[in-house]
Length: 413
Ligand SMILES: Nc1ncnc2c1ncn2[C@@H]1O[C@H](COP(=O)(O)OP(=O)(O)OP(=O)(O)O)[C@@H](O)[C@H]1O
Ligand SMILES: [Mg+2]
Image (cartoon, rainbow, N blue to C red):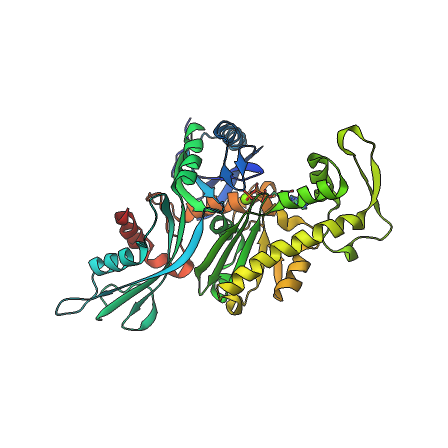
């Protein structure tokens, strides 16, 4: 029997290394209860984008089936995440003059100004995935939530736009559809992860969420409760694994195991006399290697990835407003010593973010690899009125005017 769809919300994270489906149930007391979880290894993705339809569809089907079995319900639609270095985020601003005698701002004026801010000269092969409102400004007065009915002669809006390759998004949607899943919305991976890991206080004070996955590292920065910067870098956990494979001359599957089991970024965390057994390539015998050798291999890559993120933050001019520091999530955040190294590189407090804000079988989604899938379900729960595929994000201070804003956005596409 098909589940009552308005009660069940599905997050489908199609990652580079795994596909994860999380089924949440909206409870009568206003919580999202996780009732089912399923995963499957992902083989058809490279650096966050679909490169092989068949195996991506198979992974999606298998993750969904497992989640359905554990939840005891069938589902046919989901909120799905997108990442990849085809994605660009930028801030945009629009302004319009308020005509008429009364000079009172009408809905039409608000539509016009959003339209003005959200129609940059996009190439035909790009589409807007998110229009994230930051603030309205009326005659120079900023941080206005809802300018409707206010008097003024000039209305401005500031938005953060997330733009993606039409074909990359469409391939993802097609894979979900072929797996029997209708896509309710495509959500930027980092934004989904932020739903499950960040607090409203952090978003208000200023925070950078860094989701280090297998193929990509995704950055989203908040300040004043709204998104001020997003970026995707095509590096992640697989780079560490490759480095270990090359450095220790061992097959990648073995390198992955060694990395997750014994890997650490800081040599101080590892006893000097510890050794690990490493299998050789092509049937060559195994060898004993000091565990600290692994730190020497992992550290430069950790520093490289962290510095890419740090430079992006500095370049975008938001380094000074990240008063709540950095939150690391994604499987890469499990690397021992990474948070400490990040603290040194950024000179800011760093914590590892794991999913929170849900009830139910939370032990099944406890680690940072589940941040995106749980975040998608939470995002879906918090935005569950039917909308266009192009969603706006829903920062706390914006919730009040959400419904009306969603209408305007829908009309734009
Ligand atoms: N204990 C660990 N130590 C180091 N790395 C780990 C550990 N556990 C998992 N990882 C790494 O985390 C990565 C997978 O993380 P995650 O599941 O967040 O990626 P993904 O969502 O599939 O990929 P992406 O988001 O890039 O598309 C893998 O590269 C894996 O090796
Ligand atoms: Mg991921």
